[in-house]
Each structure stands twice: as C-alpha cells, then as structure tokens.
Image 1 (cartoon, helix red, strand yellow):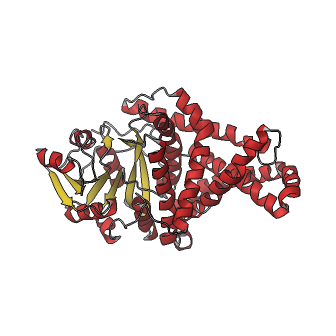
Image 2 (cartoon, helix red, strand yellow):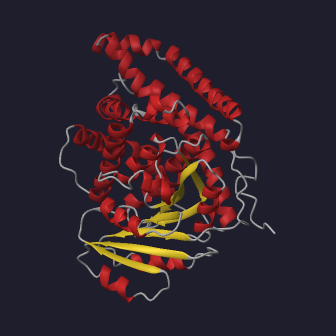
Image 3 (cartoon, rainbow, N blue to C red):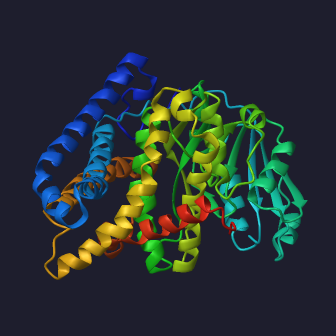
Length: 445
C-alpha cells in the first residue's frame, strides 16, 4: 500500500511532467506577465530616466535604470508567476529502490562526521547502502575517527590533499551502484531524505540528477548564520523550485544531491574548479540531460559562522558561476529549451550585482541626504514584490515542514536583517568573485 504518495504541495500534478506544449504555455504566460510588468515599469521610469540623463547622458541613464530597477523587477515578477504556477507531483515512495552509493569528501571534518554518519545510518532506505568517505589529506583526527567506525557498508579511502573535486573523483571510482548521492561532510540528513531524493530521480527518467533541499543547520550560532537561514529557506529554495518546474535546475549542489552514476562517469566526474558542483551540473545539461529538485528531501548543513568565511564561500559561488559560463555557455544556443533560458539569465547577474553595488548602494546614501538620483520610489517598488515572493515561499515551506513534522524556527530579527540588508552584503562579495575569476586570479577554496 502506498502510504506516502500525497505530497506537501497538495498532491497535484507536476508541471514538469505535463506535455511540452502545456509546459511551454505556462512558461510563456509567466514570461509575458513579467515582460508586461517590466513594460509598465519602463513607462513609470520615463521621467526618472530623463532627469538622470542630465547627469550621466541618456544611454547611461537607460542602462542604470534598466539594471537598478527594470531587469530586477522582470526577474522577480517572473519568479513570482512561476511559483504561483508550481505544482509537485505526488511522490511515490512505494517502489523498488536500487542499491545506493553515498559519496562524501572530507577534509578536517573530525567534529562534523559523527553527526553526518549518524544521520545516514538512521535513514530508512530499503536496500543496501555503501557509504564511501574519501579523506582528503586531513591533518586532524578525521582519518582516525573513520577507521574507528564499525559500520557495515562503510568504505574509507585516504588520498593526498588535492581538493574536493579530486576527492570526489577518487570516490567515484569506488562507487559500485548505478545511483549515488553526494553529501557534504557537515550535512545531516533528515528522515526519509534518501528515499525521497532517490524516488524523485527514479520517477524522472530524463533526469541525470536531483538536487535535495539544503537548509541551515547552525542558524543560532551567529548573526551571519541567522541571516543565511532565511537565504537557504526562501531565496535558494524559490529559485530551485522555479528552475525545477521547467526541469532546468542549474545546480545539483554537492551538499546533498542524487545522480545516475553512469551519467556522471560519462561526464568525467567533477572538474578541478572552485565551483565543481556548478560546472559539473552544467556539463550534464550541456549533454542534454535534465536536473530536478525535491523539496521534501531535506539535509541540514553548516553555514559560515563569521563574515570572513561567508565572504570566501559566496566569492567561491560567484566564481563558480563564471567558471560554468566559461565552460558551458554554449547551452544557451545548443539546447534551445528551458535550461538554456536560465543559463542565459545567469549572464545578467554579474552586471546586476555590479550596478547594485556601484550605483544603487551609493544612491541609497545620496537619498539619505535628499538626492534621489538612483534610489527613489521606483526602486522601492521591488520591496512589495519581494514581500509577495517571500509569502508564497513561506506557504510552500510551511507545507513541507508540516508534512515532515518540522517546525520553522522563530528568527524575526534575522528575517528583518535578511529582508533589508542581505542583498547589500552579498552583491559586493559577488562582484569581487566575478572580478577575480574574470581576471584569472589565484583561486582560494
């Protein structure tokens, strides 16, 4: 008997499984709605553009207004309309599950691995699991701890320190099953996470990978972790739902994702890049595969505690996106489908972050002194739009949490700071990351 077929989103049909013409219709309607919103914003911004042209010339004013207000408005409205049309296929957990390989790369993770392995071995996965942990030249007690664990199916591999991609590829050689899951060494899997992510992969024959839902584990550790809790919970989750709706998820993150082993091997595993998971996902997309997302397969991971660590992580993510664009931008004209659209949209983010950092943020400072050249009523219109997106995502996530027996933590101050300040912190960091990658500066993991 199928006791878990109804999903947290009401058990309605998955949009991604609709006939292509109906899926395209939904995509087109969301895009047309967003373009109409952007067109209306252009009309409202005409006077602002004229006033600004007296300072920076008309072409300069058009570019500034476009990247500070019009394009962000279009992207946010397209995201909102996509989320409003999102549906989740009933996830059939009453199926035959293949044997599963779990791959973990670990470098100096002595403190985190006990909880990670506890979460894995507490899973109710109904077939054999092999857990391959690759010690990437740790200098603490990671390797000694792993050798002390007496657990059937645990395979410990030790390699010289060569970075995460090299460690994953060393583990990939030892994988013996056709389905595998990658997990970061500091990620704790919530109950049924493995069943759910593998079930989604098996239910999607065209998919090479499924990204799980990764949330912040240590959200009470610092002010920065409180901010990041909402980023993982709302923003990252919203984008993954939107992209997965069209089978174009752009990142099967290393922290928790499922893969068809043969496809990963055909793609030659993870490249030696600072954003190895992003570049590898785009390699799969470049070969015509699809990537999905399962919001009810949840893993809790440690997020950076200090600003320094946060800076380094988000700079790596930004560099990883540029690496992926360098290697696989041909997806835009090669695939001609929804994944190509989202890759094309990623081309907008470097200039968006650049103008947000160099124009909008200084414009906010000027507005405080009464000079509303770059920050005024038009730019404030994005706030109610963002608020609606957040409310929609809160509804989705609360439904998932209620379904799984989880509770949303109270973090009001973190939410307020996230809503008003987070982008002002992240965009300048991303600009640094983009610049470092475009200038081919030394990579720092």
